[in-house]
Length: 114
Length: 113
Image 1 (tube, rainbow over the protein chains, first blue to last red):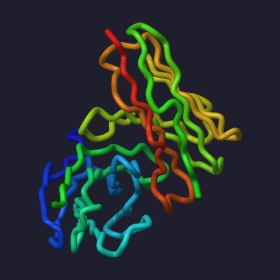
Image 2 (image 1 turned 180 degrees about the horizontal axis):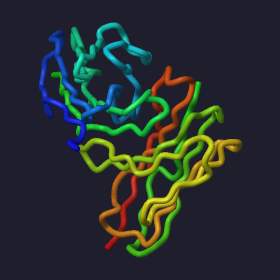
Image 3 (image 1 turned 30 degrees about the horizontal axis):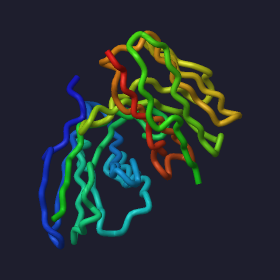
Image 4 (image 1 turned 180 degrees about the vertical axis):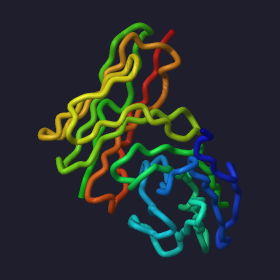
């Protein structure tokens, strides 16, 4: 089976712009979670989607949003970018409910905000 | 709020040694604990998942143990190799998934040839 894929792998944006990141889970997986990784804060949970519904959300401002499509692919959007949004954004998929099963991570999207 | 701590933050050992990485968590009401490795600039690779009802899991040269009551897990790596050099992350799932996985900051491991 193909693993979790994320596109694009690298992005450079300027402050105030918006960005959309995409994640394709492992075939058959219905849960997709998103994480932000920075050197200072480590890995932090953004949100989780299951069957097109957002099930859980981390402590991030409303500028961070996401959605999941009927084929389980997911996108996250960050509006009005700030310098502090520079990070590696990782998505993970699992076969069932995300909090009980093994999470498989993609390679990440490296976002740089100038 | 669940907090996860990993000790040591960095470790450098010669090839061939057996080593232990430690992970502790503050809330013992977990569903599972997962160990990952991360190579520089890359995503996370799942190594082992231990459900809350289990005491240990093994995969090849890796063995992970879980003591839920004391809030501790260890990852044992036998006969270390230079290819084991990476950052090892421990993550727990708790609170019904409301906070996703809670990660430690990781142990940066270097195996000297």
